Amino acid sequence: MVDPELLGTHRQELRRGTVVLACLLALRAPGYGYGLLKTLERAGIPSDANTIYPLLRRLEERGLLESEWNTDDTRPRKFYRTSAAGVALADLLMSDVTDLAASLRTLNGGDIG
Amino acid sequence: MTSLVERYLAAAMRGIPDRQKADVERELRSSIADAVEDRVSGGEDRVAAETAVLEGFGDPTRLAAGITGRPLYLIGPDLFLVYRRLLVTLLSLVVPVVAVVAAAAELGGGRGYADAIIGGIGGGLTVGLHIAFWVTLGFAIIERVDAATWDRAELKEVTGPWTVERLPELPSRTGVSLGDTVTEILTTLLSIGALLFLRGFTLPAEASGDPVPLLHSGFVGFWLPALIVGFAALVGLEVVKYVVGRWTMPLALGNAALQLAIAVPAVALAIGGSLINPEFAARIGWPPLAQGTGPVMLSIAAASLLVACWEIFDGFRHARRSSSESEATGGLTA
Image (cartoon, rainbow over all chains, first blue to last red; front, side, top):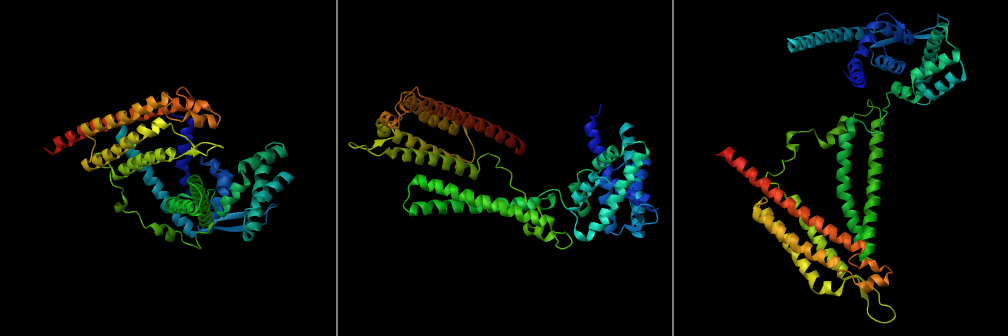
């Protein structure tokens, strides 16, 4: 039986690095903060508001996201979209994740036999 | 928007620089509204929905720190090792020097030894606290300077990159290092100094008669010089041990003999009430101080016994270990 607290810590650790990739992938179609949270939740990568909002700003500062205020709706919303540089980075990270999963599967297979 | 949301936004904006404020506030406001609307349309009470959403956003100070990229720690892992090395170096260099200078100044000003010791400790503590505070403050500020405006790599290079040359030497195989030897000798010399200091300690004479010494006259007459000889022999033993390079059985036996030669008389004198001058104890209004059955004398007896037992045990332990180690390495090289 795995200690739930231990599992939680390691899961969080494992997911921390993938939140960036998930945002870059999801925002290839323009989206706003709350919508992105819901999208990630539906995709099975739940995240917190206090993680996502600072992250969006950091990614924007680094030029990986572009933003635009949309005032057409009843409520003005800041829309983000993955920039060209962001898409290129996401492609590289995505192939890394795939490779990583394959490597881990190999290790696991060698272990179990 | 209720006052709850307004209060949350105000708290979060406190940590955001002006140029970002309007944009961040607008986005947060609409995001909170989105989340609240979602819950309310699900049938939740508005106040309950706002409470849940804001608690989901978490501490506004933390959120603001995340947005501005400000650290939530005083000194981060990047700078911590440089900080610690600088602090330790400064403290170990400056504090002893200041302590000695302050003590010397007290002595030079015609004060007694007690004042000099207090002055030295006080001076050292004050300077140590100042160093610790200012160095910590400096590093906390550096940690908060925007990484873009000032490259911290330069600071990390102050101590240079880590190379294998920095690896500390392994402790000497035989277990007798110069540092240990110096510490042991200094401790022993300090004990001799303490005995000499106590010998000279007197209460000023009352109207008539002589000053009242702290130590028992019988003790001062014979046993005190004998104890000093014993301590001096211990210093000699340390020197021999260092020259030999390791504990040997003869050294451990010699150590045991010396420890007993010091501890047995010390215990006997303490329990016999022959250490402290009874007249001195009477003068300070606490006769049990000098009595063999009093708490002070019993403590001295117990402490002497314990120290001696430990030192004897420690000597034999090291002697056994170093003899078995030299056998082991002898077997390997043979």
